[in-house]
Length: 153
Image (tube, rainbow, N blue to C red; front, top):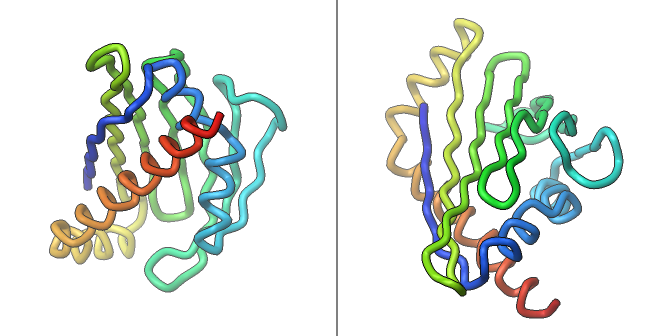
């Protein structure tokens, strides 16, 4: 299943990329939703940076590992993740709209690895509209927080 969200950020592309890809903010977001996350290595994000996380999904605790596979500042950041049942790909792309506006496109794609995961994916596809609305709302919330952070700095 593929989910895509777009949003405009009221900031130049360099500042938007810096704010969106701040590892501490990313980790804080996961922790704020009740997850546990650990980064390896500690420090700035670069290709090869990995996060191991335990998150709640569909009422169960799931362990997932994400790695930054592509980092082309300030336009692209790609993550690849895997868990026991799913492989996940997340692409974060930024494009200049004008001097003070940046367009963000976030695409997340999940692929089941097991039969129970395939069955779960079918039920998720039935609720695709609701899931997409929640996904877009979360991205919009993260963008609003990023804009506020940029204004304060």
